[in-house]
Length: 426
Image (cartoon, rainbow, N blue to C red; front, side, top):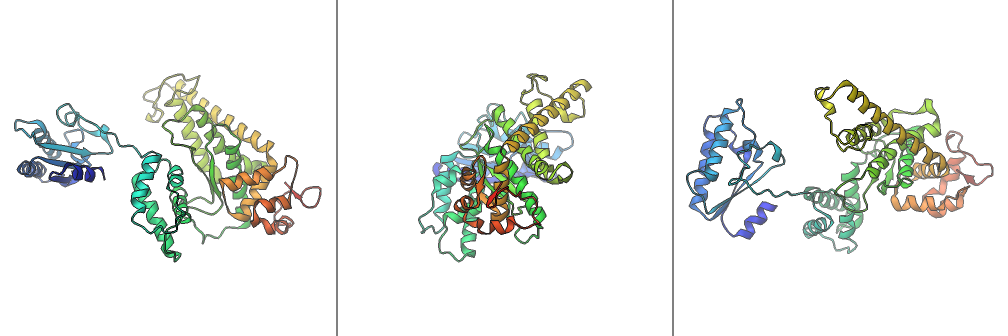
C-alpha cells in the first residue's frame, strides 16, 4: 500500500519487482535481470524502482550461493557504480533488515531506513474507514473508533481480513448491510479463533472449563497491572476448549515489570481454580499452554529484560546449550524461573480463595451462557454480595440464568455448592 501511495503521489513511472524474481540458479540470469530493470528505468527517468522482499537477493553473502552473489554484486553496482543514476530512486522492503548484507545498507545505497510498525489507534481508524467504504454499512450503528480501540496490535492486513469476515457473516445471515455485531464477530474470530460449535463436549468437561476460565478472568480482574478482560468463553475455539481474551486499555509501546508479573498470575489462575474446586488429584492437562506461556515469559524477564535481582542487569542466551554461560548460572536462572512461577501460583491462589463466591458465580454463569463479555462479567460480580448471592439477583444480572435453579439442584452437577438456605448459591 505504501509503494502504491508513493507511485501515485510521485507522478512518475514506477517499476516493481519482487526479490524472488531475480533469484535463479542459472548462472548470471539474476544479474541480467537487474541490468534490464535499471536500463528500463533509465529510459523512462525520472522514475522509481520498488523491490519487494529484497532480503531474497540482498542477504549476507557466503560461499554456498555464488549465483546469488553475482546478482547482489550487480545490484550494488547499479545503485552507486560508475554509471550515474541521478534520476532514479530505488525503494525496497523487507521484514528481515538484520539479514541484509552490510554493503547494501551503507551510505550511498539504501542509507535511509523507514520503520513501518503496526498502526496506532488513529491509523487503524483511518484504515478501517478506507476498507469500510467498500461495503454497505447503511445500518448506521458502526462505531469505527470503538473497533479501532479494541484492535490493538492489528496490522492493515488484519483489519482488511476483519472487514471481509464481517461482510461474509452479514451475507450468510441475509443482512443487507454490515453491522457492528458483524464486526465484533469478525474481531473475536481473528483474536480467539473460529468457534467449533459442532464439537461434542461432556457436561463434566464444560463445568471444568467454566471454572478454569473463571479462574483466569477473576485473577485478571483482581490483579493490579493485568489487562482488562474483553471476553470469556467456554465455546471451543481452535485447539482450546475455552479462553479468556484480554485487551489493553490503550496502545502499548512497552510492558512494565508489574504488567508481566500480573500476566504470570493470570496464567496460573486456571490451574488454581481447578485445584481449589475439584482437588489436587482432579486437575487436568488443560493448563499446559498456560504453563508454557508463563515459563517463557518468566525466562524472558530474567534472561532478556534484566528483571531478576539474583541474575542482575545482564542478558543471557539460555537456548544455546550452555555455550555462553556456566552451569552455575544456568542453575540460578532455572531457580529464579521457578521462584517467579511459584510466587504467581501463590498470588492466584490467594485471590481465588478470597473471592471463592465470585469464582462459583462466574463459573455457573459461564456454564449456562457459554460466552460473557467483560461488561457482563463486571455486572455479574457487582451483584455478588460478600456473603451471599440470591437467584433473583443473578436473574436480574443475566436473564439467561432462568434455569439456574434446576441445574443447581441436579445431583449430577455436584460441583455447584449448596448453600445453607434454599435460594442461595455460592
